[in-house]
Image (cartoon, rainbow, N blue to C red; front, side, top):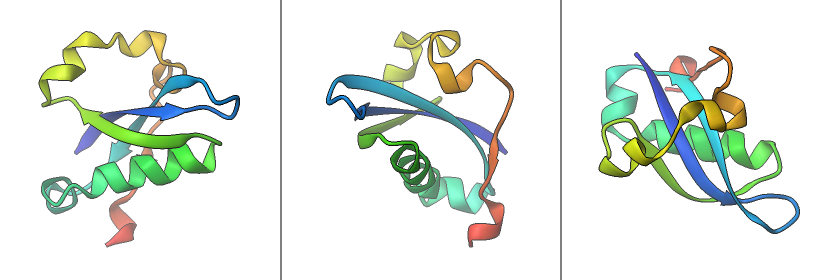
Length: 84
């Protein structure tokens, strides 16, 4: 399954920001919340300090326009299925 996670974080300049990522994961990884861990790891590697992850099934997700979040403006996704 491909899921989208929006991460509330601090950017390299110390400003509040959002980082979005699409992840290809197994149902088990999703059910265990591992998609949040992967999203935090990717955000960190991009220079962000993550604090909260939100995925598509959470009520807060509806407040976001994915096309306004830089990393979600393409169909690119990370394959985390090999991380089991």
